[in-house]
Length: 133
Image 1: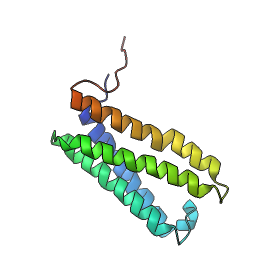
Image 2: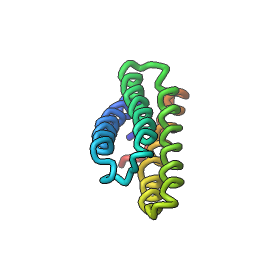
Image 3: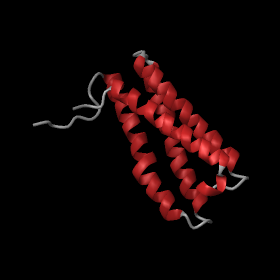
Image 4: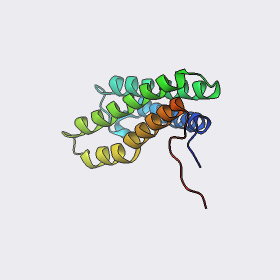
């Protein structure tokens, strides 16, 4: 089994839907997700960039566009920044454990998979292959 461009496009579409729901929740109930009124525009802007990147990946993957590489690198960069900002902004709130856990389990692995898939597709080989027996 390999992570292909088509699979990545579908996964990016699902992630975009989930991120849109998260952004809606954050906009309607910022206190529920631990965001202050002052931080809200910053987090929504960063998440909107990630959302745009995920949609861009989906479109580029479905059209077999060469922009798939650029969209994946752009989105991976935003995910890495998001992880960094989450951890840095949690240092004074006491939510460090949650921020580090989210960074290690979601944002950083997703960014790495995006980069590996994009680069491997650019070179014409599967990014991640598992032996199936």
